[in-house]
Amino acid sequence: MKLITHTLVRALLAGMVLCQPVFSQTKAKTGTGARGIAASANKLARPKLVVGMVVDQMRYDYLYRYYDKYKEGGLKRLINEGFNCRNNHYHYALTVTAAGHSAVYTGSMPAINGIVGNDWYDTGQGKNVYCTDDSTVATVGSNNLTVGKMSPRNLLVSTATDQLRVATNFRSKTIGVAIKDRASILPAGHAASGAYWFDSKTGNFVTSTYYMNALPSWATDYNNLKKPAEYQRKGWNVLLPVGQYTQSTPDDVAWEGKLPGVEKPVFPYDLAGNSGDAYGPLTTSPWGNTITKEMAIAAIKGENLGKGEETDFLAVSFSSPDRIGHMFGPNSVEQEDDYLKLDMEFAEFFSFLDSWAGTGNYTVFLTADHGAMDVPGFWKEHKLPAGLMGATMLTRTVVKALNDAFGEAEYVTAFENYQIYLNKAILKEKKITVDIAYQVVREAILPLKGVADLINLHDMGRAPLNTYQLELFKNNVNAKRSGDLQVLVRPGWFAATSPTGTDHGTPYNYDTHVPFLLYGWGINKGETLRRTSIADIAPTISALLHILPPSGNVGNPVEEALKK
Image (cartoon, rainbow, N blue to C red):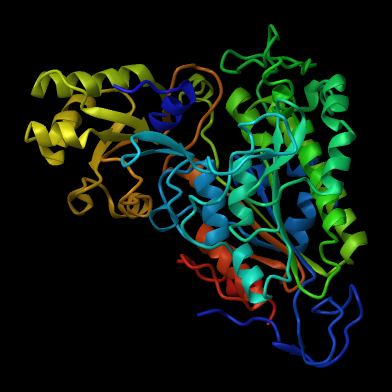
């Protein structure tokens, strides 16, 4: 059977509503009024700038868990002055970063947009595929040859950012910024003006020849400031005295992971990396949010976003909370410190937007690509139902069951996203149907702790699932990219090779329930508790801008959030 990396094993086993006046007949004062932009007679009223913000691994409860410690001007500004969809959920089962960012900006689902995970197995090529892999392009901005071989070509539908470009005959600019390549590339879309992500080997923000042959001067200028090196030298210490982190467990518990080179998971942290990943530890700290904000502001200034005749769009994703969550868990002092500092970064960012575009002239939305489960060790200490499955044990159980039933052969080609990809050539040779293989594997793994069930993805009509979960898994299945059999873990469980840190990727509430906040131009103040979907974000922004929703869109605008 094909060997799999630690990360892959863990991940695997582990019609528009027009709510603005179409034409503005008078000239509005900049920064004032319901529309809040300067609009000449007979010109369509739109915001000067849209900023889409995705926080990686931001569970819904983080809005309120640390609310009393948030400063004015950051998250409180969005919560109290914007529109809050408080019951917002993912509409598919396998909640991971690439799929989440794609769903936010396409209004679609993995079954349609093709981004079924961060990785999947391509049966035609006989190899694993990373979501933004593109061997036809090259790195721009670094001597690291592999970091830039990326593009959005694996995304099968358009994004809201693409549709804005088309609607304005490509006069609008759309830019993506993130530490993670997939979190920048997929939101920015196919027709993006640019997408930039972080090379942890060199400390540079980079792009690929898909977009351009050389970095713009503003990006080079930011790289030349060497901010990552400056922040790395400062290390990571707490914002408040450790005793004031009352929403967290103590600063040293058994289920926390450790940064490279440290003896215990306690403050303060030295953030020194190694030659192959010199700035990796920096991205697993709040400084990752700082450099993301700085690069976003540099992009706005450098590209003059929001200053032209058409609406521009910045898609920015904050990746560090996910890295911190995976390492330390949602209940850690580290994650609480991260969110308190992230809130301060937001306040600075919004203050900049006020001065740059004018208060009321821009629209912001904030959401997350997925949530996260609490660390099972923490739950078990408090008598809550949770646990860890051994990734290796699960793999060996599947392989042994098939070998025992049908004789020695390589029946499994890959494990990804808790899915089993069967070797169709071997099955055909031995005259074994997928359904027969499914029955054998299901009988073998159901007794394992943490396994809730096994689903035959080729026969979803007879899947032994409740209707709610069945829809979520159907929304995930893409005929050319999904596996054959789907392992469903129990609530509170995930597959891992280490007892520290957390994970995500399930259809349960802690993974699906994430924020969706809107603020600024054209947005009402208020909230709703009716269930909304991640698929509703792109059509809501499309309605606001009076543009066609993305090609794979399945969502609906949140009408009550938009001014009439």
